[in-house]
Image (cartoon, rainbow, N blue to C red; front, side, top):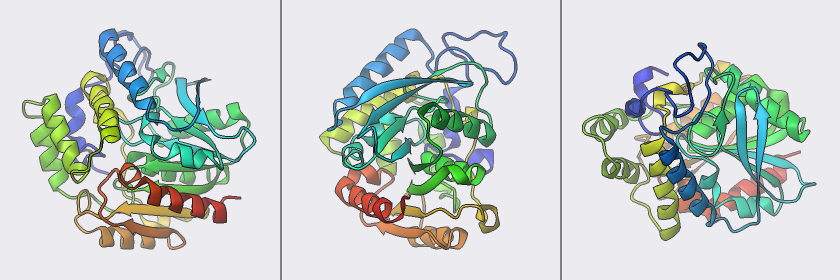
Length: 329
């Protein structure tokens, strides 16, 4: 995709700056990163505290795990039976493992769930060593996690940027992914509305502040809110306010042409929000996804915005579980 096009938070998040961190040095070698994903130790403490508050929303017992990779230490939330088939959950841009609070319990009844904090923004992962700059880097990082847990294959699910990343990984290591669940993918199959750029600059570039960030995401969510999502939302705002990583500091997602996805033959479920928010016409988006992946199961979830996994968790969980029960082998 073109740099100006925006990810889940509209490319205007470049205002968050570069990768300067509270623990890095100006003498770091090119292509390497060290330190923290936050601007200061104080901001990190605030964001980690709100992370822990958001985890109180989880309705299933879990453990925290830290895995050493060539890209630093990756933090994961793990739940579900140890002997069950695995599923890895990839968050949206500037979100982290906490965002799966409405889904993890249902998935954990049948699967071993690994909710990831990506090593490029937010969460509790600690970057070090090589910096993730390309999809190849993401692939090496994800493969290291599979190797650590001893899995040859897994299912993966993502929301927004996490959906694009799940598909990008499937292109690189198709033999390692048994099934994909893509929730309201950003870009991936179709370009997003131009209004995303305009709103992004309005709220994130011109005199940005926390209230403006909140207004932008309220629009993206179609105005949906409840007490639980508000707790999680405050954590996401902390990550944006105190984080050191900007939109242009992470590998950019893009639209894939059908010919680029011929190796993606595993079962795929795509659920899209029914409100015309990031796509002017959700039906047109669904048609584009069908052209790119003719074998995929594609559905529009009515009356939902971009965070459909939180807005209608019962329906989304039910559909994910039925898909996985039928296709995940």
